[in-house]
Length: 284
Image (cartoon, rainbow, N blue to C red; front, side):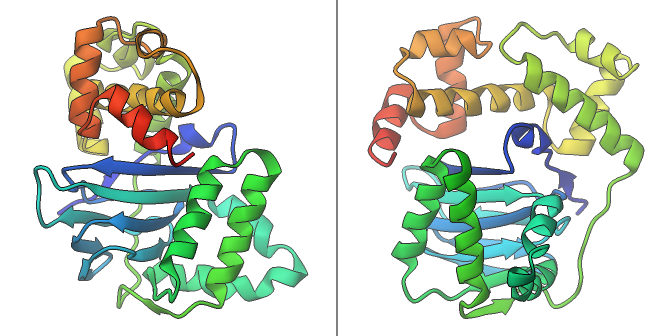
């Protein structure tokens, strides 16, 4: 099966990395890849994870580092009322180059080299790691960066094993990547406004029907689903970190109908906006 490109470059415009937690009752992601490194910690859930040519079971406290362009996905064993939660941190090769550029951090090179096969960590104190990851999400400014570097240094000395038995990387056509990045950047800068399909198709000089096929084939998402995901992610940040009411947040993130917003939110997050705010405010 051909993996699809996950574009997260828009989340990295004003930060060195993207850190977030994800809660859902349907833990079933597309087989995908991206040029960024990824740390994923399973807070709660079990099933199968596919990384490169590896197919293994996962459960609570599963913790992995995945190198750039390695196809991967997680599939939960059960659906319905069971809640799955993961913490994810994604960072660029440029960020890694800056870290290992210091003479004092050369030993971290081995960690990032091994990540090209995927690394599974066997932590003796997973709750400590989980709390560090939550701290990274919560922190601001330089403290956020320092906490991630400290964690990566800690992982350099942790018990671990490689996941994939072969170097398994996927490269996307540069022309396609440029088009996708152009679209995603435009959506990131304008998602709070009304955006039409024609407007986006014109941006990359395509007909609406051809653009829809192109976008779905390249990303695995329909245009409308991707835009909704972008808006809902911003809504979630504001629900946690602002005191604005839900209606105000929804409208300012581009949703013109409150009923439609509530429906999309429940589909994406498997809970209501108010319950999401209450649950996550306790953590942060």
